[in-house]
Figure (cartoon, rainbow, N blue to C red):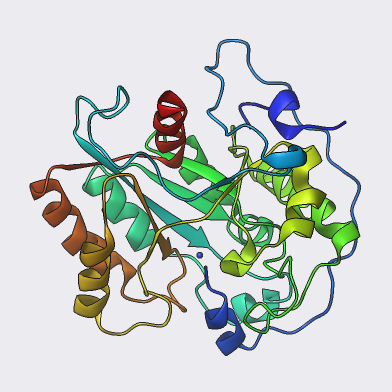
Length: 290
């Protein structure tokens, strides 16, 4: 059984937003499973969740709800800001015409504010912006996780997104890791965010052999296609609790106010005693509570 965790431990939810973008297409062509590089023996094993019932892919939504965990003791309450770097398999012509699916200003703001973050990146995004993918992946403040290659849905009726058939889900996920490797991302994480956040038992079954932990969220920022940064800021601040995972986006064309929101949210949450963490830290804290 191929397991990305065992073989490579070191290895933006647009949903309706992408529908509004006018994505089209059917399924992703199958690709052979990549050969993942062996993990460095000096690297600390990446925190993951144990498989769910009957070996299903585990699903993580938030960390511990207190600030007293071993992982969070020094910095108090933990919160993870996550950013979906979305680009579908068929949006190349739009990128070629100048539509920005990246957001360098957002990444610069996170660095300036010294905020660790997890970026859930599609393989197609990494292909379009390999220098940015590599820069993010090599920055110890960030971690890159898998958001599929295509950003096609893994269930039917997911905000009108095209769908990936069950027998191609695994190859779509693995193709994203291949794209990360080609872009020079050194250690993509064994975490997976379903396109649109849509999944069912069948999808969890199909991905179980890959060994990934599926990562959802408990706070929807509402930044997709938003033009009122203050409203998005209020939504994030009203929703955050200790251990929260906030979903935002790293695509200027579809989420133009996200940088402004981050610059407003970060200092306010810090004043409330929150410390920003990557998803791996939250999962590690959750494991400590198990």
